[in-house]
Length: 114
Length: 112
Picture 1 (cartoon, each protein chain N blue to C red):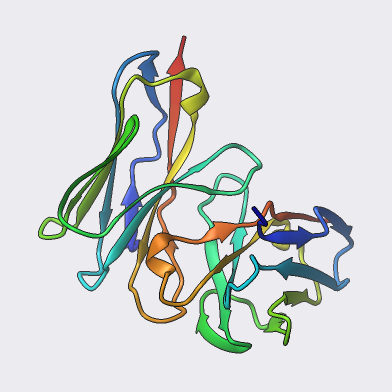
Picture 2: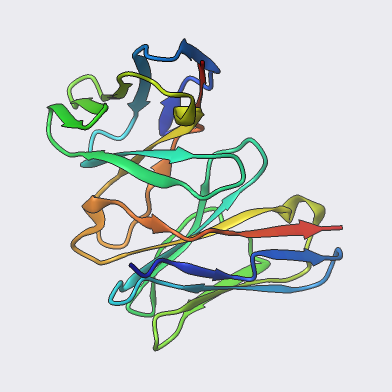
């Protein structure tokens, strides 16, 4: 079965650079969620989109922005990167109305800021 | 106070024993509850969901929910070394498009 696809798998950036992470949800899933997980930490919710509109917002820094496109894929744009942004970034998708079945997570993008 | 609380562990059990993982949550409006398993460096994997008070069994896993006490637990019977991972409790307010809120996770170590 198709899963949530994230790219790239690994990314190394320097401080103050920008990064773009991509997420392709499971086909027919209409909701995408972005999470950030630092070393030894729980996943922290950043932002979510339903039908290309922002549906919920968590602890996303102002330096970050995201959007969902017409094909339902989503991109997380991160600017002025800081060392503390180094983390695993997970995308998850679900089908509205079936959220109570849980989300399916992608394999994540490991971002390292040097 | 964090919305979802778990003991970080590590919880160590011998192979074949029952592992008991606990979670409390603060939002009484929470409706859906999940347990995810996460291996180091990997993404969370859904193993159980529960919505009603009581027990829900799936193979070696049993989830228990008590909404009055705002408590949810996961029992793993016949624990195997492959069960060694971090177990994340997650809660959903069931509003459209709102996100799962995770606890910090409990690290389980099953020794052979």
